[in-house]
Each structure stands twice: as structure tokens, then as C-alpha cells.
Image 1 (cartoon, rainbow, N blue to C red):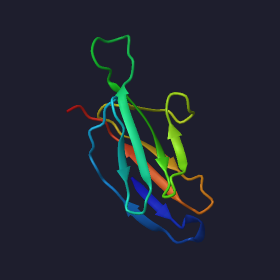
Image 2 (tube, rainbow, N blue to C red):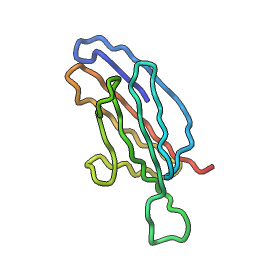
Image 3 (cartoon, rainbow, N blue to C red):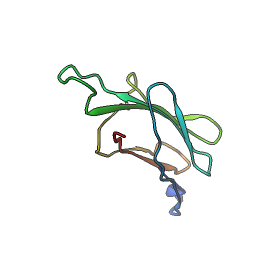
Image 4 (cartoon, helix red, strand yellow):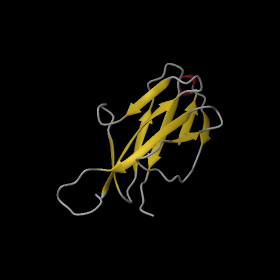
Length: 113
């Protein structure tokens, strides 16, 4: 997760967080940066009727929250922002809808254990 501030003023302050987390469908995990931005995540295998066993795709759902606890972005099956990722491949989502010049980039790469 990369958090950039001050994009609207020509000055960029950047924070980065690299982490590997075990995520499953039974519980949500929380990943928080020092500046207060946090990501709540839950993941499960996407439904597949074409193959027997687990799918080669993982569906990630969750939300990105600000320091004050407001939801900045939600991604789930019902939202426009769906996050379906192939196992072993990366997918990046970007939040930049902020009048304060924030840009938050989140990169997912699911792997089997």
C-alpha cells in the first residue's frame, strides 16, 4: 500500500507499507499504516462451475478507511469496484478522489500456501 499526500500542491509525501497477510473468508483482517489509513480485507475463492476444486481466482472484498474512520473506498460484489484477482498475478486499485490531494495505491497478489 502506498499513500501519497500533497499531490494537489506539487509536493508529495509518501508512505509505503509492504506486508504479507493470511486472509480467508471467515474473518476480516486489518492492515494499518502509521499515518492512520487502514484497509479491512476479506477474501474467498471465486465460484467456478468449470473446474473441480478451488478456483484459480480470488475475490477480495473490503474497505479503505481514513484516520477518522470514514470509508474512502468499498470493494465488494455489490459495488462498482469489484476485485477479482488471478492467483499468482497482481492487481492494483487506486484511490484518488480526494480534494486534499491524497492518492492511495493498493496492490494485491494472492498466492496459495
